[in-house]
Image 1 (cartoon, one colour):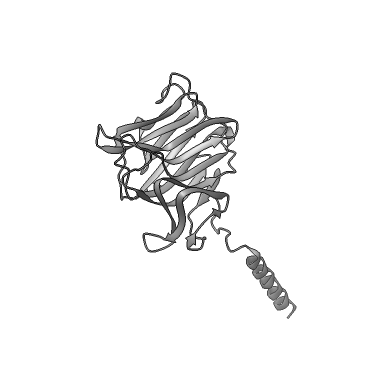
Image 2 (spheres, rainbow, N blue to C red):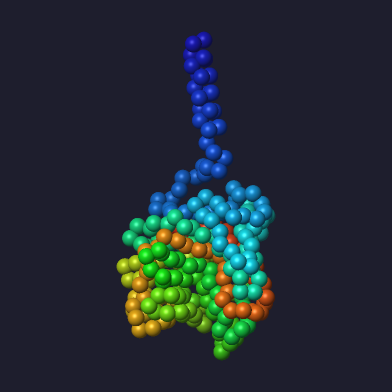
Length: 259
């Protein structure tokens, strides 16, 4: 009888521990080196302004958690008007060695077709110690080649305002893609991967980039923005719809894009 009472007490204690775990806690252990992740499944449907470890930044844009396109889970819907912006902002970053990896699944309903040379940003890293903005995911509409193309870019630093787009990496509208980037401070190198495959044509580094003859140098990263911004007024189309899911930032490659 005493043994039964001890077993019952142990079961009650275990149940109390389980009930004490917050409902937003993940049952899956975080991969080694993970800095942040978000799949939006634990957030309620509707407009969103913050999550675990992130806030938002918008102007003429909205961020809304919606049902997943595959019929399960949630994803983030971003909508902007004209040259508006809407971002998820991870503003507590402190990557060891000032280097990190990022991964996001995304779908852009349509890229700009006007005005000429309209350019857009999907990811932007920055730091309080320098004005340089590093844009590992973005691109530009090139009227000479009749399309929008992926390109790494930067602004406000010694190399100026540039987007090193490549016709070998066209931006495909209406399709889900798994996109990764690596910011490697050893050579101020930005590498981009589309659906698990490295796009070496998009790589930039200290001496090889799209700006002035000055060195391209990272700030000390403490913030990363993921979302959408278009910089030119009166674009076509006049509004933009972006879906995002499975965001992960880490000190090593998170992977998952080859699945």
